[in-house]
Image: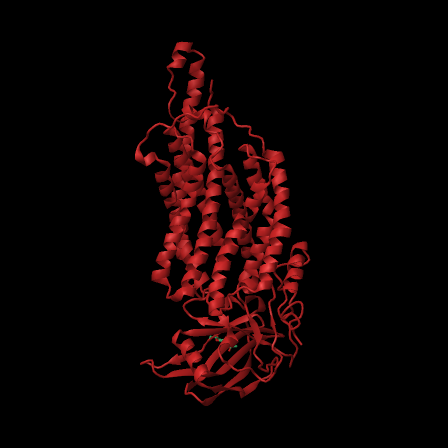
Length: 598
Ligand SMILES: *[C@@H]1O[C@H](CO)[C@@H](O)[C@H](O)[C@H]1NC(C)=O
């Protein structure tokens, strides 16, 4: 028997033990998240080809899925129904493979054959009618190739409902491999209570010239992911980058030139002149600018997490570019979890060193715990909440108990120790507060300023430009997540990420410069928040997207959409905030190093 999974299929009925072993192997490095070369896709003639039934759900929301057999479909006469989750990523994404019971053998033609009959009572009819009214589609897999089919159809006035009963499969092979599958639904049967409905299938094998490596190409949609639009948006953002970089370098040059001029003049000036010198603006706050931020605990945890999210995004996009991750179910998510756990030291390093620099209490490791669990807690908390609703609706999105155990194990046994390593390194290597200026004992009062120099206003305005540089790409990313499009243009995503970071850094530097010039030294939180406000705009955009680009409805879909969008936006915001803060703190260091303060 050919198993499409690595460890054998049927014996792991509901194995949290399996996930444990799986996730431990995963991190020991024996188990590579991309398993394509471990699964053999070669068949000999007449070898069994398994048709897996996956999920069924409304066409308008790709993320709301139920088990295929939650609809009263019948099963073929091969009675070995197995059910397995191959990877953690699949389990989290609600993949629910169940054997269809159809008898398919490699290169073996099957004429139209009835494989089972549905005895349609009132309840079953209602279930089908509900599914048809909501445009349910089902998904199946043959040899890892996804196949979609529609459940049924209503007539124009919406009174009679019909079920497609005949699955016509056409499978293309190239040598000993399967390279193409087409499904045609035929045999429309009206749903009348207390009748029998025969379900049938046929299999036709065709020689195909498609190369095995290219077999996923037909699922990609180049006319949707038009390269022209991507280039246009990148060109736009690029112009913005040039403008912003120009602005920032102008500010830097101007201040530096003035300082040099002042140094050279100072030699010739007597004490009297020096006292009347042009001490104004940001130079005035030199005694406060390196004062620890308020709430250093939360602040340093946010910065640490943001650096981690940045490195995860960077690495995952590179892996996706190199490995074509879309060809494997759930592998994107598995890779992301793996990379997230593996980059925990980054979090510890930046969070821990910042906390130490800000004079935090180092005897207690509160910061480390908060930093390590901030993101996992946020994601799991949202997932937990949505899970409740999913269980209520019996969606296959409901995350099984075993998976939750596995995720907790990863948090405590992988993320936490790695974070500890990073924290110790960070505190010892760069935890000394070696600021260029001394911090005065007494904080300087913050002078009154114009309304548009208030931190709150700067924070609100700060996110507009970074959002402007990504919102076109956001449309593609949202659409591939919520609709049936496979995202594959990761090269563009990488460019957009780089541009986003540059724009964010430039914008926060400009914001901080104006803030300091208004003699307000509370730049740490302001720079973080003004970059992070990008996420607020992204979240607002997701409302627009929900109402105008999707056709979702109902409590489950709505909470699912807005819950996960909130997680996505928050993660994006923390990442932008951290990137902005890192850039700005380098800038602040630089300008105060070059100024001579008596
Ligand atoms: C599937 O359909 C496409 C488009 O109609 C066709 O080009 C391809 O040859 C079909 N493949 C098989 C195996 O029938």
